[in-house]
Length: 239
Image (cartoon, rainbow, N blue to C red; front, side, top):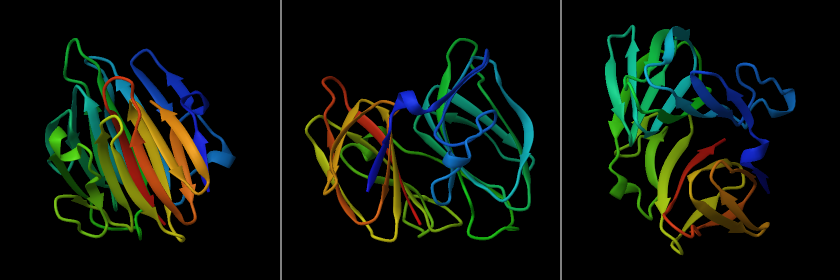
C-alpha cells in the first residue's frame, strides 16, 4: 500500500529566520491523525537564513538524524562536540538521558538547507552520543547508500533502533529496486528532481518535496525521471 503525500500537503512554517516543511505534527503544527509513521516522529525540510539558528536547547530519548543538503550547518553540544557540517554530511545525535545542543548557520550570505529526522530509540535512558560523517556525492550515484543503520552496516552511523536510512541520487532513466517487506514500513522523500516509484499498487510520479509512505509487501522500483539533472531522495526503512 502506497500513500503519496505531495509537497503542497506538507505543513509549511515560514518564519523570518527559518523556512520549514513538516511531514508530521511538529512545533506549531498539531494534527493527531498525522503524528508519526511507526517509529518516525518527525521529518522536516529546513532552510536556515545566514547567521541564524536554534540556540542551545535540550532533547532526550530521541535518535536525531540531520542531513545537510546545501550550505554549512554548525553543531555544538554539551558533550563537547562541535562541527561545521558541510553539504553531504550526515549527523546522528542519540539524545538518551539528555543532551543540549545548538544548530546555527555560520555563513553571512548563504542559506543552509538540511533535513532532520526524529526516531524513537528501542528503549529509553541510554547514554547520549554524537557522530557525523561526510558522504561524497559519487557514493550515492545510482546506488542506495546506507547512511544510518541499527544493523551496524559498514560505513553507516550506528542507530539505537531497528531502522535503516539510505540516500540516493538517480540519473534519468536509471532504476533501483527495493524489496519492501510485509512487516516493515518505508518512508521515501524526494529531496530534488523527479522520481517514479512503482509496485503492484501502481505507478506514482513524485517531484521535489513529495513523499511516499509504504506499508505491506511491495517490490519497489525506483526510477529517475528528471527532465534535467538527477533525482535525489532519502529512504527510511522501519518497523
